[in-house]
Length: 136
Image (cartoon, rainbow, N blue to C red; front, top):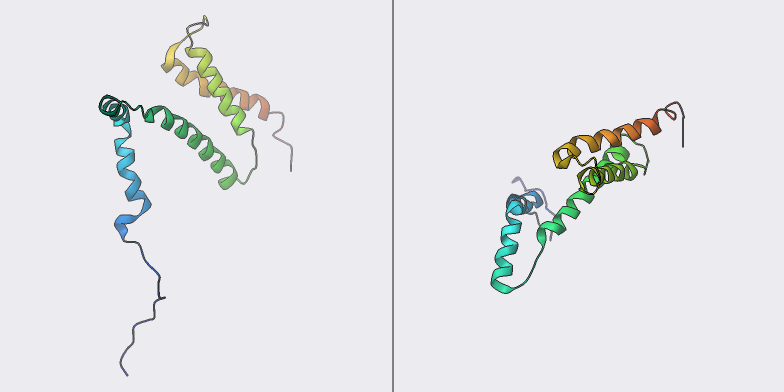
């Protein structure tokens, strides 16, 4: 008897390794720093404003929030939707610390250090009394 090849399902298509999602997204991520230049080029040639940089900033902000929720629910097994509140505390404190209207304006780099500290302090203040609670 001759050895037979194992039967493969008919109509099943396997993607080549160069068509994987990661390989297709990598050039877009490498080109992301040049999107403002691309926007100016398209605006100069065709008089169309793409505004890709502003749209992607919002996408990345919500991606960070989704990753934080995935970390908490997926890995820790806790369902707590208050993570958005601490995200908002950090965002509002960044806004307050960087606006010229307020007297304690410390700039972007100072707010980059102070906003997570303020959000963490708020989380500690809310979490410390409830640390011994059990269940939902």
